[in-house]
Length: 256
Image: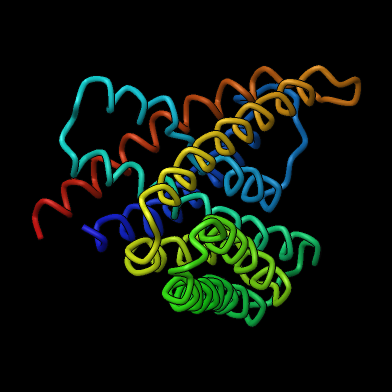
């Protein structure tokens, strides 16, 4: 199952990005969007930004209808890693875009190497902090009240440490969470487990609301540029390309 999630999150995200971006650029050149001035690298930056998915509503529906657990965790796991891959991909393409129109092949190779370095570096830091939290919780038998604080603070410390070394903080938190779920949560009490569970749910819901609030504010700002053709083509490509890529990858996964 984990190989399938990685396949969807990494390969699927990269394919979506490098199909949507070039197609948007070709449509702009052909005049299908109307009057618009946009470069190829700008289309890639935009496509790297929109290939992330937010399956909050989908997962809520899955829970209501009681879908197969494998499907639920595939969507959930892919969305987690998809966000992390998107952040690394966006930062990489943004750095390339700042070099102007002339990007030597050596820089492209360095960008590919940096993509894996940032991802694996963040994962390593997260696993180390997850292991540290597992060791700490074993020593907290007589101080159960601080167990939630230890779990949450070390998770945040994993994020900050990864960002300090310019690695992926999101991938670091995912690695830390996986290690904590496998080892640290077996050392804490049931009350601490419930406290962490509901605190994280409340925090994630609040963060989701704040993110969508800022998106709405950005939409009505005076300096916001609205281009109907670009928006409609982007929405259409997101639906079509994601469906085709997901269907193709699922076909390959079922064949193997």
